[in-house]
Amino acid sequence: MAELEAPAAHAEFQYASPEHQADTAVAGMWLFLASEVLFFGGLIFVWLVNQYGHPEGYRRGAEHANLLIGSVNTLVLVSSSFAYTWGVQQARAGRFRTVWLACLVTAALGAVFLGLKIQEWHLDILDGLLPGTGFRPRGPDWGGMALFWSFYWAATALHGVHITIGIALVLWIGWRARRGDFTRHYTTPVEVTGLYWSFVDIVWLTLYPLIYVVGRT
Image (cartoon, rainbow, N blue to C red; front, side):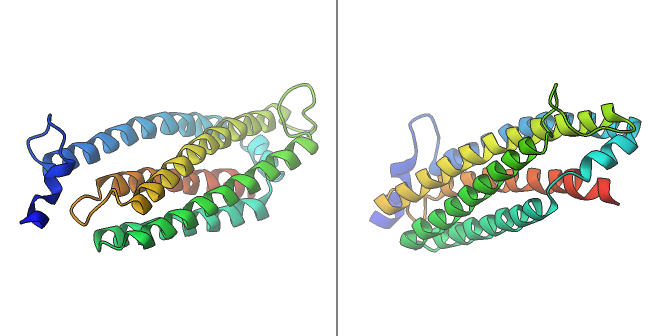
């Protein structure tokens, strides 16, 4: 009987049932992610429109992007999503000590991604790739190259902010799992955070070809 009543302990007064609370939380995260899609989608749309108007500038601008770091970071971030997905499966099975481990691995990989990205930004600045008076690349369609790098900095900085928030959320989930806040009947926060982390991964998988691949083909 106690096992059957366990989920009710996680239902706040404004919800008719634990299932209603869980469905509301998941729907709320999907709504939030839809607004994020509109935000990043608008940025990417403007990026593509300007690329159409300055194909040579974008091509030459992309040649300066660090393909090695970008590719390694892609593998790191995809691996982090696999790690967290494994953690979600462990939560559904009631193995919450393993969830804590999965969260640590995910957060560590997220931190590696950020560290490599900061190193890449540092190298970009040293190479004079920060648009402004010190922007170093010259040649045909200089303005197109500057546009490419303006969008690069805006998109990767925004993505970096989302990664930082995601790391904090994953560590919070890991801490709660270690503390015993979840049960096999109550894993909604684990799954909702997984939706956010997967979204951050998908955003990067969209940015990666735009920054590192398309301009080189």
